[in-house]
Image (cartoon, rainbow, N blue to C red):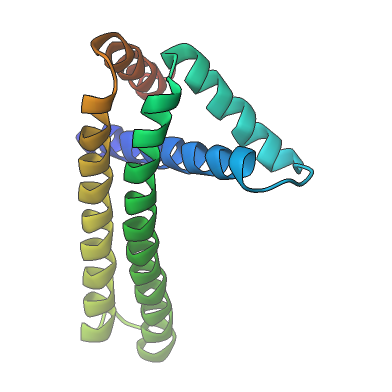
Length: 149
């Protein structure tokens, strides 16, 4: 049960991170027509900013944290991707739960664990930038999402 909640928190934090960074870059550096998916993320990001009343100063500080996390997340996701490819090859080759399959699985789990830790560290790095009220609202949004409300 705890794993389910942890996965939901990680998913939500990754979603929030991607949304913050994408919207900021799109609004400040890129000038193009949004596709349907981009529109969804922009809408969700705007909704989050409205609910939390993120100030321009906060957005500036959050962007630094978001960029750092984005780089770390990409590296860990690449490790997961490569370990998954390694696992696929081992399964095709060995057709059993061989040592190679076990090692590839361990690599995946290690990278996923590191991604979970990085995501939680990122979340806690964001908290000092937000006001107490903003943190309470964000916690409620996360809780509601975890409880499927």
